[in-house]
Amino acid sequence: MTDLPKRIHLVEEGPREGFQIEKGPIATHRKIELIDALSDTGLDTIQIVSFVNPKRVPGMADAEEVVKGITPRVGVAYTGLWLNDQGFNRARATGRLDIRGTITTGVSDTFLKRNQNRSIAEQIASQREMVQRYVDLGIPVRRGGMMAAFGCNYEGDIPASKVVELVGVELDIAGEHGIELEYISLADTMGWATPMTIKRTVGAVREKYPDLELSLHLHDTRALGLANAYAGLEMGISKFDAAVAGLGGCPFAGNAGAAGNVCTEDLVFMCQEMGIETGVDLDKLIECAKLAEDIVGHPLPGCVMKGGTLQKLREAKANRA
Image 1 (cartoon, helix red, strand yellow):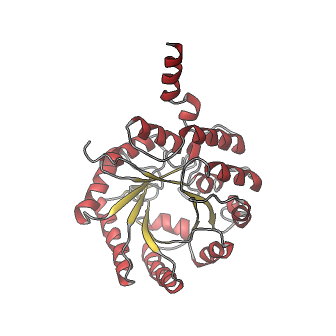
Image 2 (cartoon, one colour):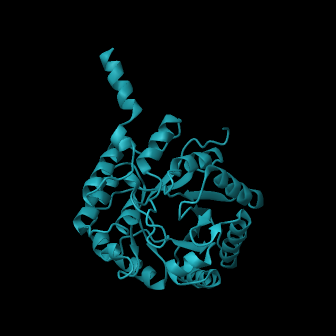
Image 3 (cartoon, helix red, strand yellow):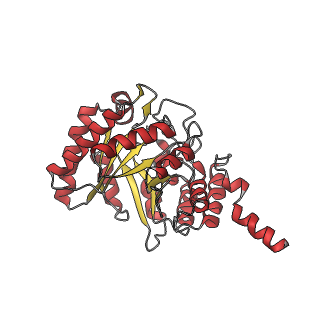
């Protein structure tokens, strides 16, 4: 337990993760309502949209309108996701987003073909071109990302050695352009991770690259999101992606039951009970979770928004005494 971090940093991805997969159309003004509410919780990084083909992901067809409509808060970075040069150009054209480059690979050829219509080799080649573009435009590149790092619905279990190999590829691409990556995010895109595989894969990467910081992007498809986050905390991981109320899921995961990221308020609650700082107002975040449920019009999987916090119960007991 000695590796537990004293503080973690959260990237809120609910608006992007959630609204990209909802079946019913979500009104633009309601997306903006949630983003503005999240901006007042203490979260300092919120991924609000993705710039992707609206025919394939109709929930993101209004990405530009969402970006235009938010009320930015000082100290909050608003980011977007893009998968290719066209999406990157759209993101830059908004003039309102925190634009930072990411070197992104994946360990599954099949998933990459479905998600981005590329093989692993083609993805690596495209990343070399994108990084050169970032450098030419003076855009910082400090992050790497790896999709399906723990398993794939199409290709099965992913050996930790393959993840280590592709981490090396990302570091090489960065080095070719004089860039030092601050961290690499390992994504459990299709919910295959277990606490054991989290520790095995993180441990393998750490053994090869002991000074490299890692982040976890966890999905709760098989109800192991928090357990996997806990395993990451035990390994000293201090950066996590999360989604308010457990919103989201990947539309190309090949699993109709694919769940969203680990639930933000549930993760914040767990960390607070462990004495780990998050910088987030949990009460405000719970209100955002309830708002998200109202916006999508159906129950969401977050637990703390339904069960409440232990602190509230402690306060009620103290008042009765």
